[in-house]
Image 1 (cartoon, helix red, strand yellow):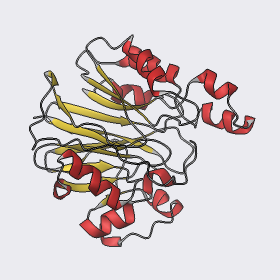
Image 2 (spheres, rainbow, N blue to C red):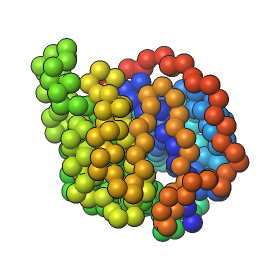
Image 3 (cartoon, rainbow, N blue to C red):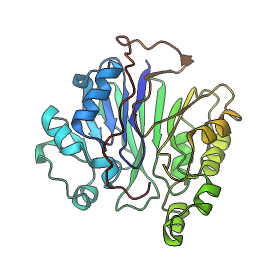
Length: 284
């Protein structure tokens, strides 16, 4: 079996990642509006009816803004911990609230989703890996540092969404106050380009076909800079930079390596979308 993945949006203005097979799918985080999520999936040829659940990583607004309306409209279970639910002040239908536990897979059809704790400035933050058959995809964003949990799961991945939030020089020379710079590059903030590259170089599996660089800072990073940096080390891994303004293409992940044509209805690429309204987040 294989998986289809796409970043519907990635950045401090909203995060939402699609992972699914031919029968069912999940979203990790819902930080853009329900309407925008539906529009972007439609442009990609992805059916909202295939989405069976939403998994929430933590309570920051750029990860939860759209979840109440999305879950209510489409009657989607929301997998979320009680501390995150409370801290995010989310008014969800209690029938849709589902728990999860560290390192214990949740099974949805042929998808097996495993949560694991990470280091981030949130009350109860988690990252996820999604397995389908022999294929594993990881979502590694909002990470203060690459702890043992992150590295262990990253080594298993055929594809991954990996945070590359900031360039160290850009952050240092930029206009952020010292306390915010310290917070971003501290152990509970975000991964820099250099830290993400070190994780990739040290722990990438030989079968990793795609790396989606995610959650880039608008003020402290540059998509071309980070793409060039990783392409110099990519080997057979395809490097993609996720946008904070539009959805990515749909990528077909197989245990045999890169597959160029997804087995979905044709992907339609329309004109570029305008930037959506800014949303509250911890870091930009």
